[in-house]
Amino acid sequence: MKPYRSMLFVPGHKPSWADKALASGTDAVILDLEDSVPIADKAQGRKAVAETLDRLGSRDIRADLWVRPNSSVSGLLGGDLEAVVRRGLAGLFLPKVFTAEEIVRIDAVVSHLEERKGLEPNTVGLIVSFETAVSMAHCEEIAAASPRVASLLGATGPNADVGRELGFEFTPAGLETLYLRSRIILAARAAGLHHPVAGVWQDIKDLDGCRRFAEDNRGLGYRGLVCIHPLHVAIANEVFTPAPEKVAFYRRMIDAFREAEAAGSAAVDFEGQHIDIAHVKTAEGVIALAEAVSAHA
Image (cartoon, rainbow, N blue to C red):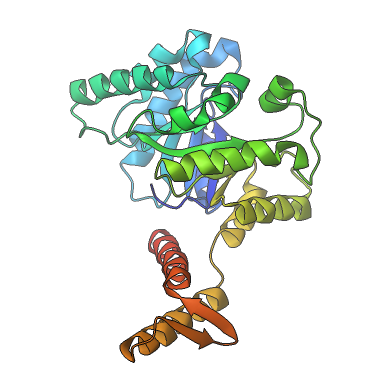
């Protein structure tokens, strides 16, 4: 999966909002058919999202287009998939998942729709949002359930699905979700998923809080932020872009190690630090991330 530093939700039944989302500089737009669409507008929302995918997918836009369908238990998922699996769709942002078997069933339906609609196999990715206690208890199996799974969302926030399911009281420091967020990171990495995303910051006007939230999750291992407002996009893009001075430091480190290696040493004293091949591999990962971000910016 591309390294999405930011993914911005927009209500699927409001097509003009998608254009505003693109103008924010987000790496991906999530056209929402779930919580932000009233029950009475679900059918119209499907039609609007399909039209938005057709319209924007035919243009040369930088951001990828994802769709959050309604959950399996809603009874609306099948109709959502029928409407939105089409050219221009990068993937499905799955809410309220429970088990790995659910992912396998969705994979099968999407495979059928790809074939029927003339799409290349496995072009539609999946991002799993952990919003139920059952899914969080089985996040490792879910992460490995299908090759389509491209990323995991370590969801958190006050008074929403995760908080209700687990009964915790949200704090900006996030200690109440530290175990959950860490376990999801471990599940992602163990499944070979290198760009897990965090979210969401709900206080729209508290930009300093949003920055701290993004930085805390970056420190934990997350590589992007799911946003609910365009004001948060620039912050996410900045926080999750490797700093130029950090990239320069790691380039110097690699050069110093290679020089020492050529002289017959497996370690080197680099700017006061003991450096060996393990540190070089870490440096190469940061540089690769910076280059991938630059390529898609």
